[in-house]
Image 1 (cartoon, rainbow, N blue to C red):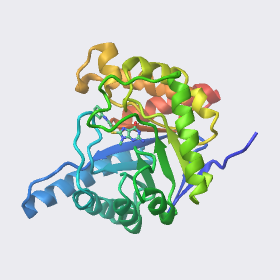
Image 2 (image 1 turned 90 degrees about the vertical axis):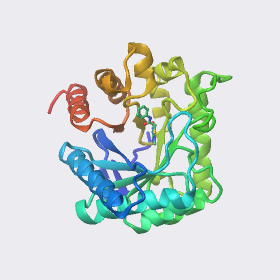
Image 3 (image 1 turned 135 degrees about the vertical axis):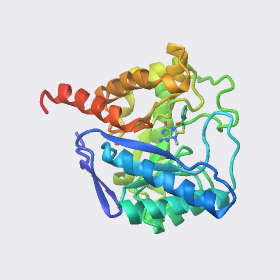
Image 4 (image 1 turned 120 degrees about the vertical axis):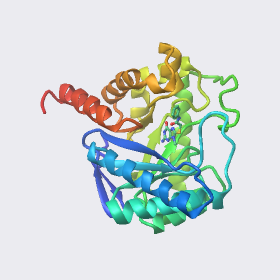
Length: 283
Ligand code: 8Y4
């Protein structure tokens, strides 16, 4: 059996993944054009991140491009303008381990220069120049599976083989491409990409068979928080999906997830730690 290190080197931070960790989602919302508006948005982002860290988040995931179903792409410069001030503030004022949710080479390079500790690419470094840019940062990268682009990915997604095989094959291929491009395996994480070009049935099956992805022997990151798989099963609007999400979190931990990307940090940390106590039979 290959023994992978429990620690992930994330710039100035070392992330202990010998137990499951929570990543808090920080959305960088487009703000007002006035300087006053900008300051308010940055201040809100900082306070939100500070709270998530106090609640036990190990990582703050910052994203400037909407990847929700139906979202339209934003220009790299616009994405950078949104993300850069937040990354800089989280690093300098909170010394946070910041993950940057981006597919853009320029945003990867700039974020790393500002002190980000991880890259989270929902396009698994498929964009032109992304692999070379990510490689040059020296940071760990999360490679996520998706089918299609956010704009059209939920229009009748279908797969020719079992979903878990399709996802595992794709991720294994991207890992191989990254390694061939100079990105060492020690720097890679994988993510099945719940909700990205998948029906509710695909998502449920993927979670139930998450152990198939564990065979790739890389740290597994999952994001299911508030997603429509919960909404569809339970018939809940987005603001009422926390209990369903906590159930999914517990199952994901039991099936090998090591980083849980969530909006509601405090209850998720409790769900993760409680699940882990059972799996380890101790606290
Ligand atoms: C309500 C709120 C409903 C948010 C849906 C959503 C993942 C991710 C996203 C994921 C990784 C989202 C950036 C989608 N999901 N990155 N990003 N894994 N690695 N939708 O599952 O949160 S955005």
